[in-house]
Length: 187
Picture 1 (spheres, helix red, strand yellow):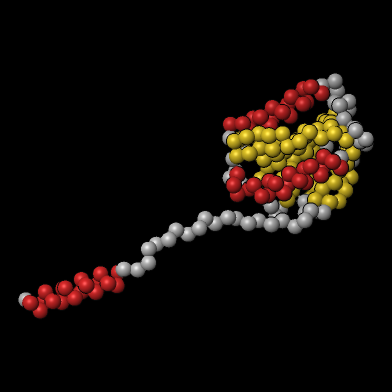
Picture 2 (tube, rainbow, N blue to C red; picture 1 turned 90 degrees about the horizontal axis):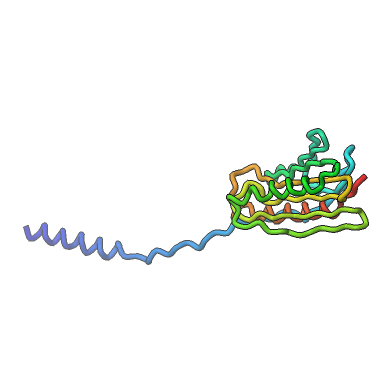
């Protein structure tokens, strides 16, 4: 019996001595690092009454009736463009474009004006809205000459909205949208 007690004590002491180790340390939070190549732009000439410049990484697909998809296969995102002629309905077109933007307020944390745009030499005036949060679209914009032409655009990712994950891509594509607005010319 004494022998069994000694064996039990030895096992318990061995377990206590070997079970002690370092205190567990939490792992540092990982940060996703996405790097995109420096943007280079090339002109896009259309049969529609406008032309613009796009990132060379993007593919432009004409979907009919002066509608275009600017697709970024590597980023899994698309900028949807829609052209409409102004026919004494500029206020209605602007209101509809802004309504489309503010429909995202349900999921958005914030909708900010990314900038008002004016290029008086080319008669291009517009506004860019940047949407923060888990909304379906991260950017919406419109440009017009105020008399004849109106173009709207929306940025969508081909994934479930997760703002923290797509923020680097949204920032990168926001620069492309600004370049599109800056380079736009009416025919």
